[in-house]
Length: 210
Image 1 (tube, helix red, strand yellow):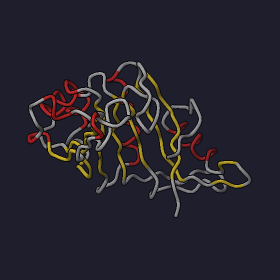
Image 2 (spheres, one colour):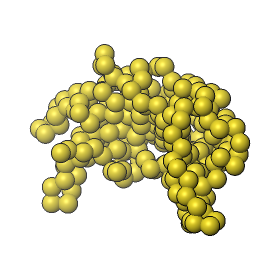
Image 3 (cartoon, rainbow, N blue to C red):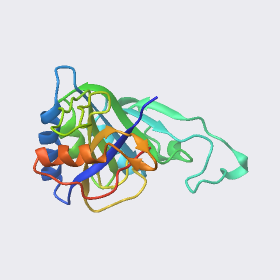
């Protein structure tokens, strides 16, 4: 099964500029059935409540069976996972004991339906917006074949990693292409450089894979 690799092509502390740049790249490859999904890692009850207020239809997934520091709960207690939409989140802060961080996500949405609301609600939390179902064009050089299965754009919010596990004071835009490794080298990386140039951008760091 094939997989993708995502290259950073833009970084800025300006959230509005980051979003507009990501949208410009997305529009370059947008098709009729392109879609968008969002995800945020919320590390406090206040962050959960803020996001739920803006995205009551979002799905909130809390951790299960461990304390906030990663250890066992007092008395070897365990708690069930929290999986609920924002409108049904518990009001009692004690209900989040052992369940932080909470992940908020929404998948398979039409382009343009969630991006502004999500970026307005993200605050200091780490998160991402991912557009998929895109199509990159063929390039002029041999081997520069276009891409559809792995043609995506990701906007990383307050982080530089796809796992959302490291906080940053800026936002990063990633362009995805197919990962193809031969003799330890990414043979699709030259195509990724060419694709960035078509958008008046340049690759600014190593590719990221899950």
